[in-house]
Image: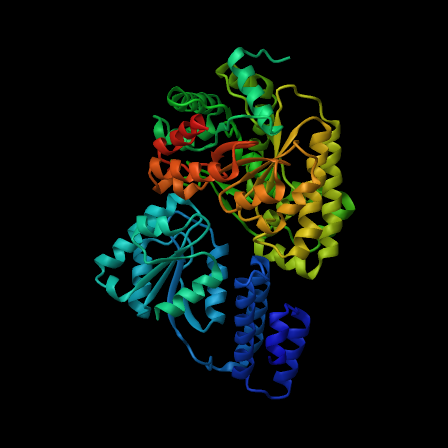
Length: 205
Length: 374
């Protein structure tokens, strides 16, 4: 594994930043650095799935990935590497929780997805508009409240009414979601955690 | 001295036998602080803000379930002055129904980074009040803090109402481990990052906060109606934090707070949201037959029984989503399978965490109906 990937996978923040800065100073292609970071995030995801890493480790790696992104941005000038696909993401209407959503955002981004984040307490039409504008084939809905189940259902209905339900896969996630909530809301699948959201999105492309 | 009655006495005996693992049957416990307005002619906003009326509705709602199947006890009582309670322990703004939210919308914590750089040092130097007193006016109208203390000055009178209705209330207070308070005030992502970057500083701040709490527990007056108190654990769950963080910043504090309560004759009720499977063995460090772990369906109670045997009592763990979307038969099936696997010793059946406002009434009843079977 490349040094940058390894530093990220080992959650060594200071050493990672130093290494990235050194590579940039030496004129290395920033897209290559980004790809090594993505490989590090893949390793973090694997360790999470294996039970060796926990949510705090995902968060730490996500923050490291974001920090590197900020360092690389002025050097990328529009180059971002390969994009797997687009995902519209948000927390549904009536629910203001953003921590889970933000974690999924980072994991999807580092997993190669272009993510359109519509924020929290998002009405069904906000999701529909984002899907229309982006053409994303995946909609990821987050909630932490059981009272938000109806908002998920309403969002699924709004996608149907907009006429592109058959073109969009809908995944849900958040503390109180499981298969029974998938059935209740008419969504397609549930992700147990941020890493499984990435896996599901890859499967659905 | 509280005035009890035969029904209350009998139920209390049943609860105590359960905690001691001397029970022959499970205990059916009501947990659903925000549910009563869903099935009553009162808005959630009114129920929360008018504590006298809210308490009445709460007890009436529990009575309705009790007429169908016996409610042996209550986990958490009516959430009077709840916004202030949450603000005091979690240092985050709590949006309330009828205020920032709709009349019947459940309260939500709007977590922001209120603990600033330098605040851990301030806690170490001057104590937690130095930071809390700066944060509180940012997140709540201070009149509500005054009302909170006025409300709790009547605790004994309120406790008598539950006793008169025949219900032992298991939880009579909130003890929030320093990890949870700091996490709420700093916001989860920023706090978790701090745990990686400056664990020693956090530990030092937490040690100061712990000492304050231990002193408070040791010196407060005895209250003869108190059975147990809640020790919260949600962001410190094993499924959320790495072992290094958990071993250093979570468990030692929960453990010491639990011991302090036991020292005062109070049962610690460790409210364990999320998944604690990885660290179940550590609960063997607690004194035997003195504690309850209150899980929400994410911790594997079958594994817990294997690891812990009859060391601590279990409270839970019907998942909130099941109470909302499943049928009563599905709820009963879930509970029967659980009880057939783990047995009844030391088991207090209840909604996991807290029954959500959208819980089906018949699903709440189902918990108590199955309790009668076992």
